[in-house]
Image 1 (cartoon, rainbow, N blue to C red):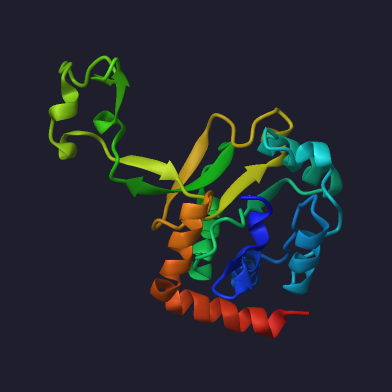
Image 2 (image 1 turned 90 degrees about the horizontal axis):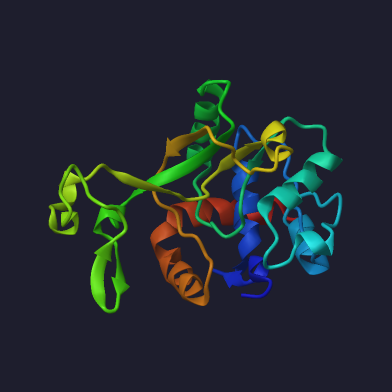
Length: 227
């Protein structure tokens, strides 16, 4: 979706929800938006974020990596770490954001990155590929069982996926050419809607009714803080 960060969700541009959630966080003191788009920059400033620079176009292509724009950020700010808040997750609870930040502060100092995750039902041991229309698992076996895909789901270890509720990246890791590095601390949260397609956007718009408490809180803050 072109310029999806400012599509309408519940009467507000998508990025406004992330900005508002950050403003409501007790542990986030400054909100910087990195974008190459002048309109997204203007909208971000209207809702209370700072846009102190415009991201170079070559760091904003479809195949651009996170490392590129993060290195650009750290080139402009003398920070050792930053909370990475992707605008595609609009329904964050500021209380959970603060809890995750506190967990990050208490995590071992040698971690190379911090990511929030949630448990998923689609266990990788239940996923198959089709080879000439025949089922084939992605792993040779599970505990000695080759036909493991027919085992009960509870047989397998719990599986998690990164959800982007709040991630923390470190300058040292980024300038080694990696976003999170090899020693990533996982912080468990509830699932959050992540908008990557038009279908996801439809779900988000439908779910606005299910997120009344969070949206009411964010909308009040948006109206109060809007410049």
